[in-house]
Length: 133
Image 1 (tube, helix red, strand yellow):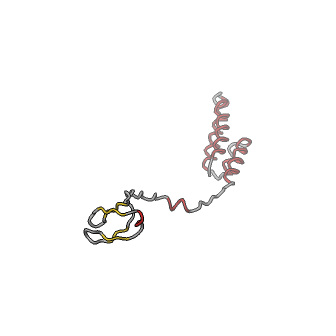
Image 2: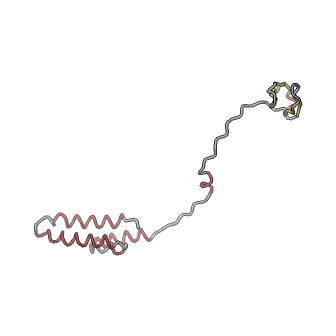
Image 3: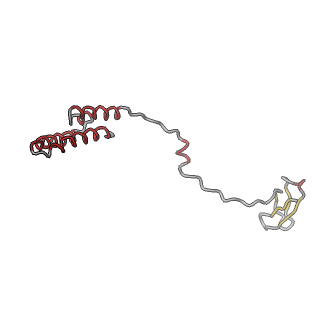
């Protein structure tokens, strides 16, 4: 048996299984009925807003020059500090490190430069290698 409720008056009707998929008329209000079992309607979840963005293929751009530039700048800073920064186009950083190197070398005569000079050397190498430009 299939139980169908009229959408107009909400009157319940019962039909044999052989009438499944056919049409009938409500006995109470004369509205047309489609004979299918009444099932609870699940609420429709809203579509996620990012669904359209996921359908668009992403373009991957590989920039190899920045990694090469960072590696080359780190090697040059290893050999000739702080000139590696010029390869990266960081003139302000180059001038700042050049002034710091000058004072650090002067401080070698007092003993403090024995710590600051190798520290500046290492920091310059690490800074050039980690720069994402």
